Amino acid sequence: MRTTVTLPDDLVAHARAASGGNLSAYVERALRAQQLRDAAPAVRAWREVDSETVDRIPAALRVALGLM
Image (tube, rainbow, N blue to C red):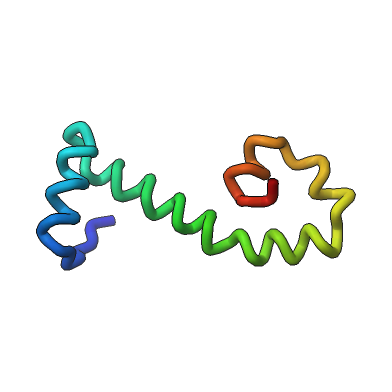
């Protein structure tokens, strides 16, 4: 899907430089990371209710979600 956004020049310059030539992939990774951060409070709340199930989540995913 093609989307247009308006961003500050300095942010775009940094993203272009850091993207290794694939700005779309860079932005996708950033948005997915934010999506995980946005979901973290709900996951934490679920963890409080169902800690036994959470213990079966792989450690790397728990770290990424901020659960450890």
